[in-house]
Image (cartoon, rainbow, N blue to C red):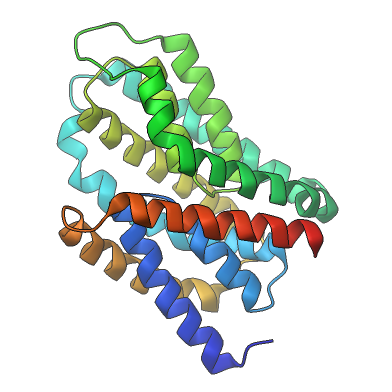
Length: 252
């Protein structure tokens, strides 16, 4: 077990790198989750604490990209509703199901997150590059965002990766605008989980207050360096860590 000072130092460092990796490659929450486990938190507490701490990062991204959300009101309203309802259902499932269910499922979810992170470029290539001017597959889009948001409400790791994959598959638009919608939906989902978890979940607020400013700072620095840092290297670093965490949770 780490001492309190080492726990604090670990969360500060991991929070910073999580924010930077989210800005450059995505998946930074998969670094925070094992760090919280290393402080001695049970998986359920680590999960809800991680979800609450990651929320502010989506706000900055959504606000900075809000101009790219214009001229797609039908898509925006449908996906926003799906994200809000799905996230609420995911939160409820997390809170009403026995903790043993989460302990059993979370290694698979972490492993799935690692796979999605590793192959997101291949998945995007397989789905094809989005083009502006076509028609959205609104039913597929709405259902896909709804299911992804249930996942995000239950376990938030790599939610952004899943959201962008669904948007590329079902929405016809340029990547810049789809990425803006992904940030918006991430913010909506995070707002729902923040409210639900803050009211009834076992959130470690000291860890949240430590992580939020360092994550925001890391996101700011990562955004400035996004064009210089090797995104693939950072993404695969997250993949290796997530895979190791999944194995650890299975054998623990």
